[in-house]
Amino acid sequence: MASIFLLQRTQFIPAPLEQVWDFFSNPGNLAKITPAYMKFRVTSPPDERKVYPGQVITYTVCPLAGISLEWMTEITHVQNGDYFVDEQRVGPYRLWHHQHHFREVPGGVEMTDTVHYRLPLGWLGRLAHTLFVKRQLENIFAYRLRVVQELFG
View (cartoon, rainbow, N blue to C red):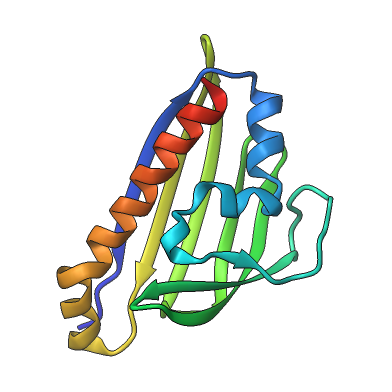
C-alpha cells in the first residue's frame, strides 16, 4: 500500500501582505529559502512575472549525498495575494502537491504551507521516508522559517 504523507507548517510574518506575496510569488527567491547544502538552483529562464497558472519552473537539487536531481514543477492554481499551488511534473517524488496560503492577520501575515507527497519504490520509499526523507523535509521547512524571520524581522 502506497502512503501519502502530509507536511504542514504555519508561520507568522510581521510584514504587509503585499510584501510577503511579492517575495513568495517570485520563483527567483526559492534559492534564498533553501539550505545551501541542497545546492538548489533554478534552471528555467529568468521570469520576472509573479507565479501564474501553467508556469513551469525547473531546478536542480542535491537532496542526498551530493547526487544532483532535476526537478520540474508547474504552478497549477493562483489566487493573487491568497494562495498558489505547485505540483511536481518531474522529480524525486511520485506525488508532490504544495499549497502556499497567505492570510492577512493583525500585525502581518499568517503563511501556511501544506504539502502532500508520496515517494516512489513502494516499501523502499516508505523506509526512506522513515529513515531520512521526513526529517530532511522538516529541516528544510525549519530552515525556511528561520530565514523568513530574518528577512522580514
